[in-house]
Image 1 (tube, rainbow, N blue to C red):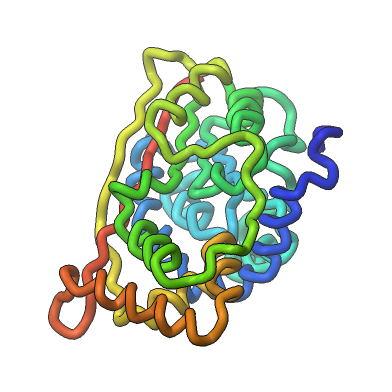
Image 2: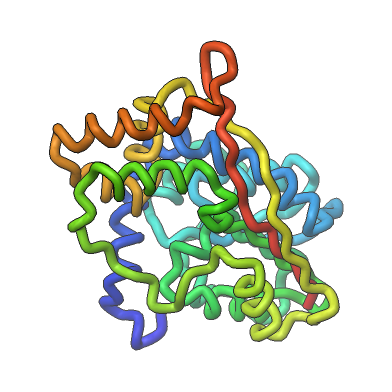
Length: 274
């Protein structure tokens, strides 16, 4: 770990949040992040026998799908509880507790590095991308997903908007010292600054839909399976929680699809070659 990160509030906040959410993530918010795994794995061009590092692996979904396509997989996460979940779900695969900003691997040992919705949880995203570059062989590929900006990512916009409209916004959450990563140009810049071939850098917004049964279902999913929104929602007084749910329910109405809602979700997909 870098010396200036020891005791870093953002890292401590994210770490404790994911330790708490590890046991419930797979049955809640993973339903959303799962939708973006196939595009990510397609973008990095898996091939039989490739050595793939899944950084910020969580409970191991990406690692599992990559292994089913013939990859030799190693998954790492800074949360011991997440690693325990990954091992329980995928006993035949290799997982290790490790920091994506200071990977415990030699230079040039992987063909592919993927980071599925991990970058915005790191205090210093640039370090994680630099580490991905270091552990990749020449010609190796990196790919990552992160959430799109609010104007594209409807789920986030509606929930945050409801909290701002009728909730308590006084809770002070730590700010990532390395900056936000929900912008196409920022994502491209991180890859170029880390040394990836600028001609191969590609960023795009990909969109899909997730089934949501109700505003309560959405809030329960966010409380159980996220960190920042979970912290904010759990901090709300009871009467404000009800008001937030009503505001979300109102804004969800255009997305009704029979007895449920088809909710738009959007992510940035970024790839590059070393």
